[in-house]
View 1 (spheres, rainbow, N blue to C red):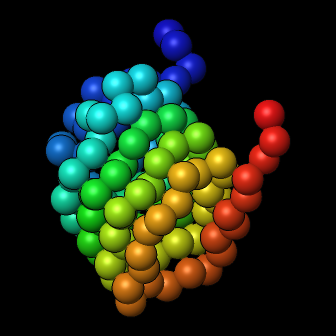
View 2 (cartoon, rainbow, N blue to C red; view 1 turned 90 degrees about the vertical axis):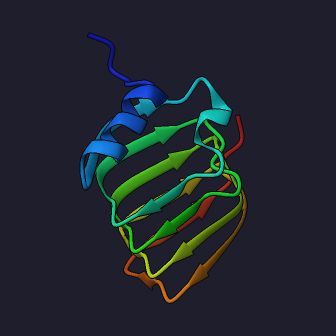
Length: 111
C-alpha cells in the first residue's frame, strides 16, 4: 500500500468524516480549489502539493498538520484553530479572521 494517499481519498474523507488524518500527496492540483470546508478537524496530517486557491476553511482545527509545497492563494481561514502546525514552501496569500494560533511555523526551504 502506498505511503501517501491521493487527493481523491482526501476529498472523500472531508465529505464523509469530521476528522481527517494521514499523509496525502496531491497530484491533481486543481481538485482542491474553491472548496468551502466547515467543521473539519485535520489531526496528525501531512498534505503535500496541491492548490487550495480561493478555498475557505470555517471553524476548522489543524492539530499537528504539515502543509508542504502547495498554494494557499486567496484562502480564508475563519474561526480556525492552529496547534503545532507548519506551512513549508507554501505559496501564501491567505487571510485569518478570529483564529486561535497555538503554534504555526511558516518556512521557505531551499531545494
